[in-house]
Amino acid sequence: MPTLIFNSILLGIGLAMDAFSVSLANGLNEPCMSKKKICGVAGTFAVFQAIMPLIGWLCVHTVVQYFTAFESFIPWIALVLLGFIGGKMIYESATCKEEGGCECKKLGIGALIVQGIATSIDALSVGFTISDYDLTKALLCAAIIAILTFAICFAGVIIGKRAGTKLAGKAGYLGGIILIIIGLEIFIKGIFF
Image 1 (cartoon, rainbow, N blue to C red):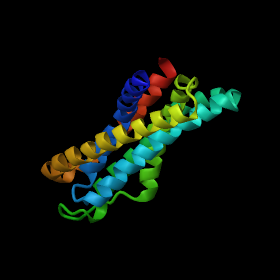
Image 2 (tube, one colour):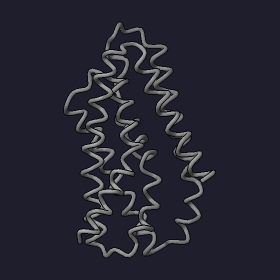
Image 3 (cartoon, rainbow, N blue to C red):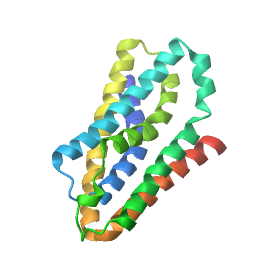
């Protein structure tokens, strides 16, 4: 059991890094974000980071041949989703006329869900690494991943908010660029490594 917990902690930290970066970008883009919304952002990433390994685990135990065919598309999906959202953030920053306001920079639920999918889709492959776990152990692993992801993403939004208030009008550009870079990084790692 201690090995399971230790491995789950390492998986959780590793998986949460992309979500942390996107959370940072969200905080940069929306420096007026409420604590309730910060919890919603962190919670969304936590849920997706927990669900994806469970889906991968389920695929290993049921339809593994379909999952392996889908795995080659993961880098492309992440690139398109994060590139689109990053480009949208840059566009909105360029077209928003509010002076230092938060009205133009609201993160919508649709964009948040797309971010959650894009940053966690590579976690499907974690299902292979936990395939020897029974259902209880897989659920425990997913819970640990979710808790760590929530804490890491919460911190990411807070850090981004603080930096966003200092960067004022440039934060949306920086947030969009960060998302595009993360999409490229996932793509390059998935295709070339």
